Length: 245
Image (tube, rainbow, N blue to C red):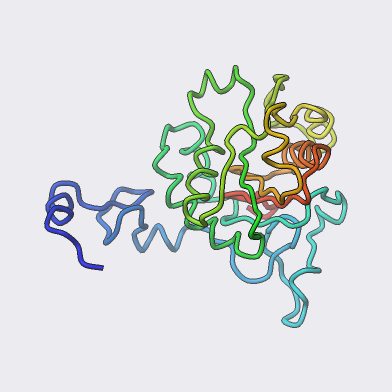
């Protein structure tokens, strides 16, 4: 595709820079060589339920590979995928997007997530973000999961409903909690928006979030979708926390 004179002029004034370090790169939202090497993209064989990378034999079918966490805690959703491991640049990207007001990072993140999402997408897929309680949304000013879901929907050409789910009850931060405490804290805290049932009923829902640790939040959201009549639920996150990161 040819670059217009206007675009060329814009590039002269505002040259493309690396998403992480700010060095000059060839295209918008790209990464420089060193940052690309330091970004823990997930590739190869992964857990079918959460997307964490696995070491498995070359003949193992992808739809049966399951990590230890998902064996211990069966997931209510069908399949899950992640674009990055939550470590190094993967962790920095999540924190900058969530707390550093780097909303521009949602665009390259969605491109990477779209590649991971290929086996999850169906013709009737409806994309929905994990919701925030209104007090946390007021404090943060935006929901990073909505930014990711919106950019992903544009990338994969699927509809997105930003308020399919709601979070009417505030919960404390899950950071520092063990698995059981996380699940107990999140139980029943996410619900279907009372005016969105017909939008979702009978469709497959792809839940989008920035990071998966224990899966407690995604489980609560999945149960809400299934209880409201979703045909099935898959999950997609920007980064998956792994024990060796």
